[in-house]
Image 1 (cartoon, rainbow over the protein chains, first blue to last red):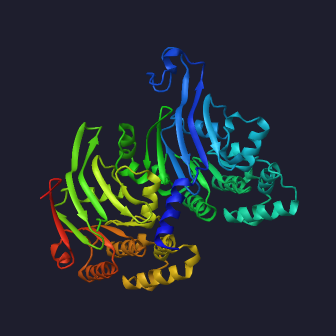
Image 2: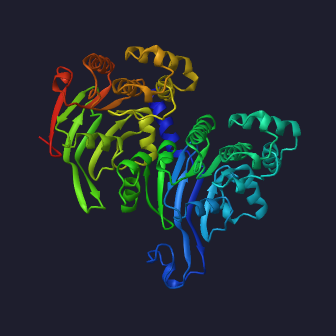
Image 3: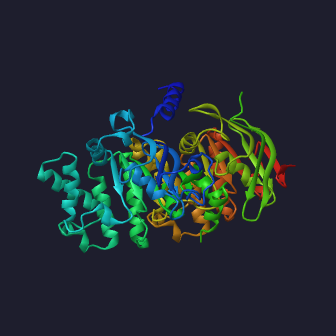
Length: 292
Length: 233
């Protein structure tokens, strides 16, 4: 291949490669909204409309995630990070917006408009979700292996031996010893539960991972091994990820690009190192300067 | 011949909202670097040298002006305004950055840090070649073989810096940005760095470096700029 050909191929790679997840103008409101707060530049008290009291949890958020890329979302509690994730994963019905996932129908339609049956398919085959709270992602009284099997059954797997094998493989991957595989996550430490949740999320080889505060509340060494695992998954499988965290250290380590959220809006976005070294928005500066 | 990097009227200031002040990083900087040149910037600390380098690498968001880079993949491209994914591609494949500080993930051995960088360049298919190069590079920088599997946290400042340079140089970038790469090194290590810079120059690598010890650069630089208060003197 000549240099010119190489150049064209790369150009084509960066340009024509489609995002695996594309979110546009996503909003989530609690309340009916009124003419005053529905205007694009409405003045709210933080994210609450002073006239009608509607809470604007997510306001007109758009971003793309490309295969193999990690996009970070930072912001204080209540800024709408988790609500955004829940809308994408259908845990919460978005008020409006358009979400397209390349692995589903080639990103042809808005997945928020799908029937509940199709949404279930997207949840089971396109996304892997890891919640901050393992109780949301796991059945605590079923064995870890069953938790993984459940996810695989949901995506159409029926062979018990295949599920068992995959279960052991994944648990090994996240450093859960084989002898604990048949124990229920209720008997595990928080860090182990989180790792079982990751194993479960990975079981169908989802092309997109949604990680919501995965390391919050874990001790440092467990946190480190979870972060290593996430980077390894990205490297080995080219999975696109959205990582929500209020921990800038985690974001620095994981994310290629970062969005900063405040009161439901994205106030700044850019390369992660640029956001951290040269923040532009007053809120981002405050956030970065608060780093100890 | 087209310059590899052409900076026109680059200005960058930092707006500090919490104290309501604006600090000037650099203002109205213009210069060209031709392919294969080694350009040095000198100047007192705080004169804005690093700001220029960081603008080229886009760690700092340039405020005005242009930084036109002649990329192998994209042709001429303005690094001030091009989209972030292009910047990420260029960082991975064409533009290297060496700072005074080791910027690597913790819990990686010295060997893995350099190898990871090598694999990004040579590709996983060339893993064996990447390993050979990694070993050669670590030896070149006199990093004791017994220390290869250790975490660099336990290294001395000079060792960390040499590791940092090794990881950046192994990629043989087209454009290498050196932010005081010799700042905390002893003379023997400085000479090692100089040796490698000469070698890279021989291979046609274009370099832009900040140095405050002028003697070190003597005979190496094709051009030298001096910075004062954010301007070129």
